[in-house]
Structure formats: structure tokens, C-alpha cells
Image 1: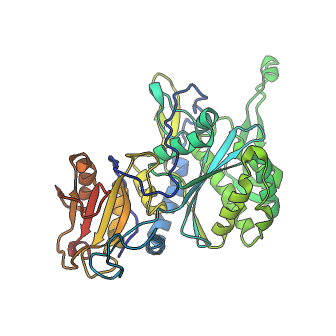
Image 2 (image 1 turned 30 degrees about the horizontal axis):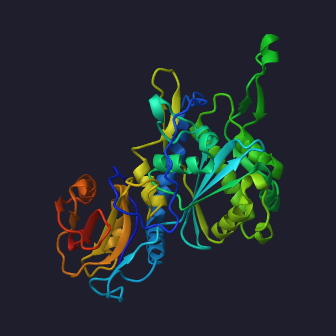
Image 3 (image 1 turned 90 degrees about the horizontal axis):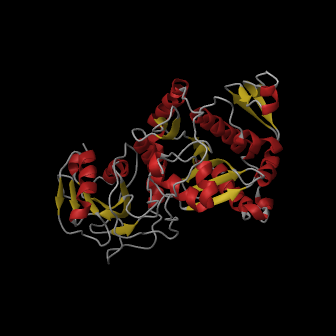
Length: 436
């Protein structure tokens, strides 16, 4: 058997059946008029340093992350799909357990979304990858040319709609979702104590009507650039705050900094006392979130910004900050080695088989398959280890487009052929041409 690494993503294709123990919500996004993200004029150049740093870190950690993802993939949901039970033998195929990806929605005391935390786990107590988004970002286009903000998605349909909308926008599903209120976040942050974050920008409060009528601008600096000390009760408010003129991509980096400092301060702390706590409005989410962060803090944690880009809103002078389609494939393949679909048909289900004596052959191919829109559901060995040329097959015409995307990423041509195992859209057999 073999499995993971990382590379760019492409389009998605129809899916035949799910292989999920906890399928994400499939409710569609509702069109609605919400607050626009017009604040996002976009000073994107200031985020280049973060993207460069992310790329450099990826180059250094790619092998280690690939190995972790591969080991996690071997935690299969059962044994081989046929009578071959030796993982090293030809013909052994097993189901893959999707990479655990948790969505945590942070809300204000008024129940308004303040931001989201995305945690991709490498396995229990082995660390993982953390991303964050502010409520002022958008998951993508809604109906009639609108770009609903994440806070609009949450207001319209709660955690389920946020989970679906964001999963569609990011091109992968969440295996679980939790909600944590500002009060519960204060309790959690209280275990860490005050944290210090490096605030890049002066964050300006909007003027109120009284100061405008008085002829004054009314603008005040709520949080000054430089080191800001946040008491536990201040964390949720800092996440929820959006400064005048602060673009969502800048706000995203601010959120990520807060979570990095908070999780670092929580590392090694005993969070077991929080397991039974949680306010009613958060559905007791603090217990699940404390367990999640406890497991995460037990290993190495990597912090990854979600790639975003400004999208003009038709008919207006405003822009929305949405996932960057060009950079998203690489992000997904790196952060979620074995993704699942957020909605049926989002990703093509792929059977990935090693046809060589190199046990790492599929490890080199898996990220390219994921980057090309694949969801690896079956992993194992071909009937022979003497395959010279990598093959990509699709069993039904509806899967042709997905197969061609994957084949293109691997530098081969897709062909029609019966699936060797049931319930897959695309079959990939890795040949020795991928080992040199």
C-alpha cells in the first residue's frame, strides 16, 4: 500500500456513493441579502510575506507531512475489500479513513458569528494543521450574483449551513462541526491566561451617528498596531471586531495569530475539567472543542492561511474575499491529504493502487490525485507489481471529465474500463514511470 503528499487541485466530478461514517450536511446555500464584504478593498500585497513563508515551510515539511498522512490513511475502516489480507501482497485493497477535519464556529454573546477555526488532524494526539477565517469572508457566490459572508450563512442556517457553504467553497467536507460561544471561549482562554498578539494594523472603530452630526469624524483606534495583550474575556471580541477599512484577508491573518498564541499557551495544560462544561446556546461545544485542542496541542501544530482573493461583486464597486481557486488546490492537498466531499458529486471517488515494488509510489501520486479533485476512498495494491506505465480508468461516461483531470495531473491519458472495485468513479494504477 501507499499514499500521500501534496500538489495543486482541479475540478470535481460526479460521485456514486459515500464512504463516510459521519456524512456532512448536504443542505444547499440559500440566496439572501446580507452585509457585503465591501470593506475588503484588498491590500493583498501585504499578505505576500505570509504566502511565501507558507510555501517555504511546505517545501521543508512536505515529506514529513506526507508520511503522517500516509500512516493515518492506513487506519482503514475494516480490512481488505477481498480475501487478500496481507497489505504487502498483490490485490490487497482497503477503505481509506478520510482525514479528520473539524470546523469550530465562534460566536459572540449575541449569537453572531465571530469567526471559524479549521483543524485538520494528523491523528489523535499527533498534532495537525490550523486555519482560520473571519466572519467577513465569503465562501463563494450565492444566488443572483451575491457573495454572502460567512456570518450571513450562519445567520441564515446555523452551523449546518455554514458547514455546507464553507465545504463547497473550500472543496472538501468537514468530518465534524462544533459551535463555541464567547462565554465558553473566555472559559477556555482562562486556562491559558493573558496572551500577547502582534497586531499589524491600527484597527479603527466606525464613527457613530452622534459624532457625524456634530461634524467630527468620530474615528477612534480600538486596537493599536504593535503588541496587544488580550485577557481571556477579550479574545472573542478581538476576533469579532472588524476595523474600518480592514480587509478580510488581513483580518484572517489576525485571527490565525490569535489562535496560534492561544494554542501555544494551552499546550500542556489540563483541559479535562472543561469536558462537561458548555453553555446551552453553544450546545455544550466547549467540551468537544477542549478535547480537540487538547489532542492538537499534544503534537506539532502547523498554521496555514486559507488562500483568498478579492472577487468583484457584479453591479457594485465592492469586492468579496473568497477562496482563491488558483491556490486552493495546493492548500487542500497539503492540509487535507485524504479529503471527503462536502456535498454529493463534489469530488470523484478514486481507487489508488500501487503497481510497483516501490512501496512509496502511491505516496508520490496521492497529492496529485487530491489536487485534481479526487477523493481517495480505496487504497492498496494492483494485481501485479510489474506495471510499467501509470493508468487512469473510468467505469462510466459520467466520470470521464474527472478522470481526465486526474490523468492530466499525472501526465497520462484516461481510458474507459470497468472499475476493479465497486463504488468508485476513477481507478488509478501507479506504474514504474512514477518512481523515477
